[in-house]
Length: 314
Image (cartoon, rainbow, N blue to C red; front, side, top):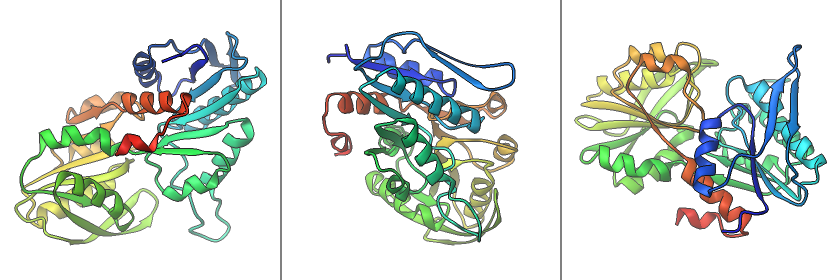
């Protein structure tokens, strides 16, 4: 692979993941300083020439989301003004994705706003993993490559779980995601019918599908406060599931998430490293992290070489 015109830059959101991606591609992280002025403003300095280069900016919009978003935008702007030939925004985790439609009168569509900001800043294309809603791709007027972490998680799930497995969607919106995973694992599927009265709080109503005597794996794209997982695990146990696990792509783990998980009947939470685990996550030692670095690294290589990205999933 000819890497002479390839550069990868990053802010402060997920440096460990970026290091793994660069190791896969056998290149170094681009030389840039991303820091704050004393008043909190973001300062970016690019310390090497990027003129005519194919540049990828890897940045998750995770906690603190506003700082990480601004780092991404200012990095893109700096690279554009430094005459980079093409700039690809690589968002392992697309923050604000849950605000993808108007659910109340006079509400914003923040996911669309973020898409506009990234485009106006100067990104030529977007590379991301497991968008909360697939239609967010339509918010962009630039090419979007949408990757799926389930292909990274499959090997571990096949080794970890064999017989009597049921993949559980925690809500109706995740049915397609759960069905695709269940098909590849030759497992059955169940759906949890829930009602959400206000943000970050959910109430389980009933379960559609057979879970009695089975090993249940709840599969979702995001685990935030873990309230949904906790309620779902309790409902699965009450309905006869012999063991309950959870598998989520993006470990946001905010608020009382770790406390909720510790008090739940979930035996293990399987996540990826699209978001770095918070410091308090060590308080619950049942989190298994699977890296998406190879998936992202291979996608970056293919985009750089103008090869098919969709063939990754065949």
